[in-house]
Amino acid sequence: MSAKQGFDLSVEASLENLHQVRDYIDRAGESFGVDSNVLADLRLVVDEAVTNVILHGYDGRSGQVELHMERDGDAVIIRIRDQAESFDASHVNAPQLDTSLADRPFGGMGLFLIKKLTDEAEFLSLPGGGNELKLVKRRAIP
Amino acid sequence: MGTLNIMVGQEQGNVPVTVLRVEGDIDASTHTILEEKGSEVIAAGASNILLDLSGVHYMGSAGFRAIHAITNMLDNSESVGIAKSKHLKLFNPSDEVSRVIKTLGFDSFLDIYRDRDEAVNSF
Figure 1: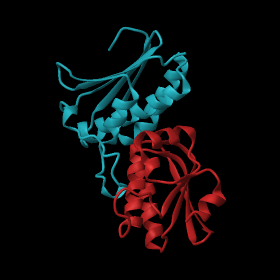
Figure 2: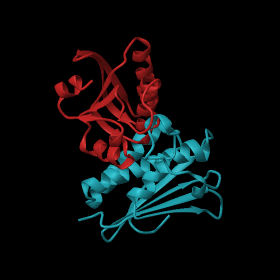
Figure 3: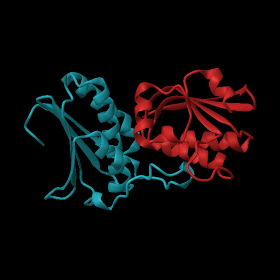
């Protein structure tokens, strides 16, 4: 993880820990002075990303999810790491937002939110195995 | 662990309305609680549901999955094409939840009310 000052969290990859992840984002974001609307977006995005790691990355297997949140000027950088199978974001379909609710298939909204609510979302395969999702939100801190 | 509590009530407008008051966080660990409660009240005869989101602190896409599933149960035999659900409506989401509703485009398919009487009488 980066040597820059920031906040770290490591949790077991379980849906039961999602609230802990959101609390972590809240505490770190408040410490940095992140705008409340931006913080709400980041809370949502990180929750969605970690949910995807748990459900699709580890797919029921045990593992850890590591988060690191740091400030870079008025931007916030969040890194989410796992040791799951390599993830290819290009294979996920966008949600069909302009179709009737009755006709929409489930799923796809998480990745859509991640890309819509951050300025950068970069998926990396780690050399030793696993993945890192790097999220950047600029002008997050007034 | 995130918690979700749902209270069921009945109101009478033009038609009987089942009100589900939800309190807590609706995420991937709790959304099935909402979906199951929706299924339960529909099985018991509910055909119009007002989802009171006043007590919801956080809702992610999993929450919309549950709402989507409930609208499918209610509207399955009706509406063709892009139309707002006639049988499930939302009441008083927080600003944060409202932002997510708008981002996902669910405000195009679900009516949202801030006045409870207006909500109940809208069915």
